Amino acid sequence: MYSTEQLRAWDKRHVWHPFTQMQDWERDEQIVITRGEGSWLIDSDGNRYLDGVASMWTNVHGHCRRELNEALKAQVDRLEHSTLLGLASEQSIVLAHRLAEIMPTGLERFFYSDNGSTAMEVAVKMAYQYQTHCGHPERSRFITFRNAYHGDTLGAVSVGGIDIYHSTFRPLMFDTIQAPSPYCYRCELGCDSSTSCGMKCLDALESIMKEQAATCAGLVIEPLLQGAGGMIVQPPGFLAGVRRLCDQYDLLMITDEVATGFGRTGRMFACNHEDVVPDIMAISKGIAAGYLPLAITATSERVYGAFLGDYAELKTFFHGHTFTGNPLACAVALKSLDLFESDRLLEALQPKITRLAERLSDFSRLPHVGNIRHCGMAAGVELVADKATKRAYPWEQKIGISVCLEARKQGIFSRPLGNTVVIYPPLCISSGELEQLLDGLERAIRAVTGN
Ligand SMILES: *Cc1c(COP(=O)(O)O)cnc(C)c1O
Image 1 (cartoon, rainbow, N blue to C red):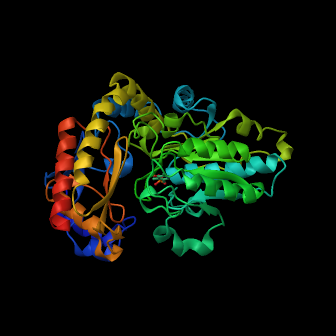
Image 2 (image 1 turned 30 degrees about the vertical axis):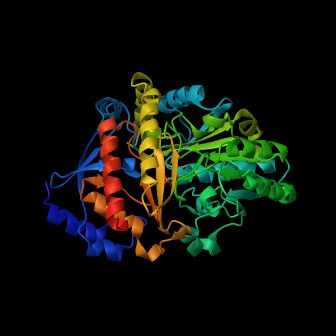
Image 3 (image 1 turned 45 degrees about the vertical axis):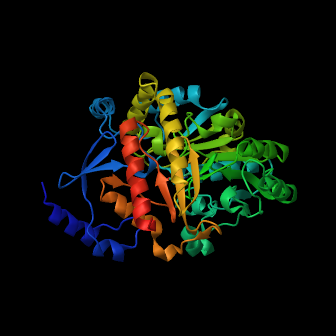
């Protein structure tokens, strides 16, 4: 055992944290997590923090859930890893078989990788190569959305649309066609509300497709919810509308369910809400319940079939990662699917989702809460300097970060997206813990925005 002081010192000396200004990090005192238990993280001094962001949106059944721990331990005594390059392995087979039963109908071919970004790289390359096999090498571009986030590798960044993360790397990125974000609160097309707006953003998307579809392989979308863009919830019918347009203009629809998959929206997958079946779908974060890195790019028989041919035809999908189909991760993912059933997790979520909605409507009375966006067990509370004009707090003011630091004093760990406070607990969170999380965040918002 090392002392907290020792761990902090070595961390500051050697660990480069993601999405972090390390100058700030090195200056401040940091929490060192050493244990987890249900919805709680426990630091090296024994302090407890409610995990308000489900450990970067991955945690489903809680930390150190006994059944998952046992599944992992049982697997590690049988096989820790064997490659999918040239060999099959038991757990990856069984998991694919199980997933075929629960995925939107028709998605039954699964390509394994190990994180959300790689799942999206695979999706983009797969879509383009599919078009080349169909005789359309000129269909090389992708339609994407502003405020989209699909990961941090270069292909994933190219199809993303968050300027503050992506603009530095512009010279390294491939060109895409960006459609307006369905961000109703700040609608770039000047619409007023999500219910009566008539979704001009769909019309804008159609105009883009009309002109450019012939040069495009597909469209990339986070269904229902643009997560990292600020928990931006799409108006009802938007996703189904996008599917309709993709059909009409013969584009592959790629849905990124890395964040939304595995119960987060209240259904197993976000696409289920509007009965949408994409052509390609990426899943990761919640798949192994937050235990281990695992990802899948799922597709249809039609896309898969286009890659079949004589060896010399070079139709092989030349892509693969060393740890694809890792048996430990697959074993945990399988046990997680069991727990979805035995805990009746999706049913148990419904009253929590209703309660979350009730509590959030109280938040909207706060003078600096401009907009509240809610989808299942995910929510974003956008803070504004001026509610009447929707004037944003300058980003340098770090208002979201201040709220989270304030919440931390009350034993809550949260991480904002710019000026948006994020609510994204493990799906297993109890009703009491959910109240505690919301009480803490409300108090923190009041304290920081001054009322
Ligand atoms: C987190 C995320 C990714 C990237 O996943 P990583 O595992 O961090 O590479 C991609 N898409 C969405 C929607 C995400 O939320």
